[in-house]
Structure formats: C-alpha cells, structure tokens
Image (cartoon, rainbow, N blue to C red; front, top):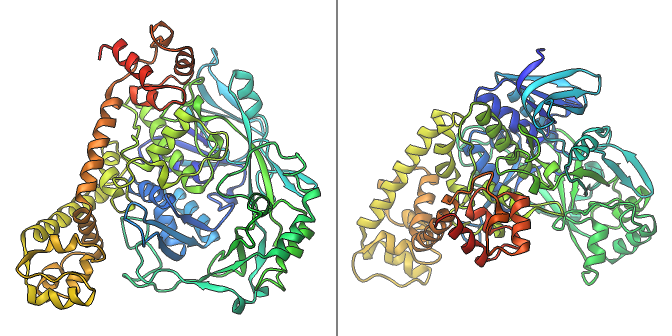
Length: 628
C-alpha cells in the first residue's frame, strides 16, 4: 500500500466501482475502500440490470467505456427488450443476472485494471486542508490515514443506516453488514445539509418450495441484443440464446392483503419509526394495499438469483412488516402455498445529501475536490448510481489534470438528464429515471448511445480506440443502407403479394424502398424477407445496422424536429455564467430568483432556466445583464 493517491473512492457499490474504473483507466492512481471486499458490486436488491430508461443508462455507460454493460452481459441469465410494441424511443433492454457471478466479474475486472488498489475498512472521517475548503484524504475506522488529491464518496445506504423489520431496529447498511458512522456528522458540521431516505427489499424464497404449475411463465427474448456494444461478451451464441432461465408471475389477493393488514400496528412505516421518504415508484407491499385499496390484486415477479442457486427474489413484495406476518401472507399467494423464506424483507433508512449542493461535475460546492455519487445524492437504482460514479470518476481525473470537465447535456444522454435534474431541481424522495423525464428521448435511444457518446469519451481518453472504430464502422454501414433505400426502387410484382397479405396498399409502379419502409407495421426485415434481390444486397449488414437504418428512415421527420429543439436548448447552454457572478446585483430579478440563483449557482443560462422558481422573465433579465 502507499499513502498518497490521486483519487480515493469510498464505497465499492455500483457507483464506487464505475468511479474507480473510469479514473484508473484514464490514468489516475486510485484507492478503492470498502467495508467488505466480499461484497464489491453487490446486487443488494433485485438481481437485474436495465429496464425502462435504466437500460438506456447502462448502454450509455458502456458506450463511454464503463464496465456495467460488459458485466451485465457476461452474468445474464435472461434478456428482454421491454416496450417493443411502442416506438424506438421507449425500447429498453433489461437482463436478469446471476447475483454472485455479477459481483465476481466486477471484482475480477477491477483487479485486472491497472492503477486500482484496494483497502478493506470503514471510512469515518475526511481529511481537509488547513482552511477546510479542500479534500485531501480520509481516516479509516482503524485510524489509518490515506492521502489523495480528490475523494469520491459513494456510501450507498450505509451512512447511519438502520434496518427495520416490524418493531425490530438493527444498525446496518444492508442485512448482515454494519452501518457507517462519522462522515455525516462531519459534513453537517462543515455546513452541508443532510436528510433521511428509505428503501426496502422483499423476502428471499427457497425455489424448491414453489409450485411452478400455478404461476405464469415468462421467458426471455429469442433474439438477444445485449448491453455492450463490444459484443461477444454474453453466455449467448450469435442471435440465439445458448441458455436462459425463465422468470414467473403470480399475484396477491384479498386474503393476502387482509393478513398483511394485521401487521400494520407493528409496521415501522405506519407507526412513524421511519422518518425518511421511500421510492414513489417502487412502494412496499403494505404501501401498495393502502394507497391502492381499490385494487384486488398486485403483480409479483418470481426472479431466480442465478444459474446455480435455488434462491428466489420476489419482486413486488418489498416489506418491513414482522417476519411472521410476511410468511403467513406469502403462503396465501398462488404457487407459494408451501414457500419457505431464506430471510424476510426489510426497510432501510439512511442519510443522504440533497444534490443541489453539487456542481454538474458532481463536485461539492462547499469542499473542493470532494465528489458525491450514487444514493448519497438521493437516487435509487444500480444504473443511476453507476452512471454518477462514472461521471464523478471522469471529472475528478480531468480536474486533477487541469482539463475541461465533461458535463453531458440533456439532449446528449439520459445521464445528462439525471445529473441536471438532481443538481438544478434536487429531490426529496429517491430519484428514479424514466423515459418521460427526458425531453429529447427520441434522440437518446438505447440503440445509438455509442454514436452519441463514444467519440466524446474517446477524446478524454476513456473509451478505447476499438470502441471508436466500431462506432465509425456502424455509422458508415447504416449510412450505406439508408442511401440504398432512398435511391433504389422496389418492383411491384416482387412486393405486392406481401403488401396485400398484410392489407397494405399495393404499389402500381416502382417505388423507393424508403417510402415502403415508412409505412406503419412494415419493418426492414419484412421487406428483406420478401425481396430476394434486396436480401442479397443487405446480407453483408448486421441486424443491428439494419435496425438502426430503419429507425432513422421511419422517424426522420420527428428526429429532425427534435434536433431543432435541442439546438435551441444548446444555445441557452452556451450562455455561460461566471462562477463569481453576483445575482443580487441584477436589477429586475425577483427576490425568489435572486435567492435560488445565489444558492444553486448555475453555470449556464440553460441551467438557470430549469431551477424551480425561475420564470421566463427572470431568464430574459439574466440574458440582458450578460449582454445578450
């Protein structure tokens, strides 16, 4: 071990792992500190990656050279592309994962990353400069001091964590692991604002005790897209799955709800023992039956935890009720009548720091070279945490090298939407990403994350040349396909039988393939499969390239319109505000505007316009004051 590092990353969850990998791959000497080396990149809650909007984030992390996509592919036990029935802006990849394999692969990849050292210990204190304005290292629970030029805190749910099961309260960051103490108290004393949040997890069940004949089977996709743009990293062969494990669906009923209600008098949530707000979009089962009392049943997903384990994750049954109430309720659910629990569900309450105290680089405003990433910023989800870790690692390294920071805009990435929402709007409940949060979601599709972000990441020294070469080849190939479709015509006698079979208007003369493809319910593969000449010309292109070309042809008008709106947004982002700008000196700004702008310190007019309480008139006044 050495005492001095470029960057110290505190915590080895999804945020910490991506932060350490990014900074180290860019050339910084990194120390990754975790309380338990056996739980690096632990999937503390559900054994899955991706989902609605979250899958786009994993693709973006991968496009920039992060590890989450590769690890997810290698450890996947099932793949599904969600929302296929909707437009491509909504398509979201998701994997079920082998929990132990996922964590093991993450540790293996980190151990093979030069410039990463590890240390197992709790961090109880930051070392600051003499004036208290700059982070210079940490002090561990064993009293050891490690010095660094920058520190990234990714403490997850461990800061003063309390586990709730009925009337029982246990100190811990997750089941079987102790909480972390000292950092919150130090930061609050310095002047940081902190709060409490809550999340939860469902019981784990013995899969041998489930009657699968009484539940609905849910298989993965036949065609596997995967997360990583590098390809060749999953347990699947080609486009067909080598092997996948099914999930299952079951439902609660009124009897289940009645049993759960008997535990409400001992519920920490209903009795006021939990002060923190839980995730709105992932409520506990007791919260569901209270808030949605008119519903007779709630959907539950039976999710395997891996290839070689019988442990089952019961998605949708998060609970902090007494364990005996949980067990009684489970046995009234179809298929779970004889179920055995490995451990009960529980709620966990922990400290977080409102993210309006951060810059867009995720550096804190109060302490220079101190960065926050993950649940410490009030977010929920592996994907949201991992993306923040990636950006904190990137920006800590760039600052130490005295280079321009990398801040992704809202029209460039879901990661940009996430961080901008946190920094400009804040959150008082666990923040979760949705496609509806992105104004430019047709530009931010999961299929083009590499085109959007790999060139940016390559320029800063993170995304490899191999990744950039893949992107350039992809762009060249789909451009060729688009050119062919726009400039080559289909013969009526070739395609009319197909068009008539799907009740689409037949063509009376040669018609551009692009015009036919623009029709609803016709895919590029439909045309290819019914036109031998086209199929022969297209055989050199992968399905990924053909699908990309189809999207760009079908939605060309909508994409151009969204690009125009993004350009308007970009012009506001180009109007910079100096860090020391005195908002109180601007005549014409209302009292609320001056207060909010002075507190959040936006760096551009665009950021200022998105702060709650700033109206268009305030923006106009600012533009005039900046000489625009």
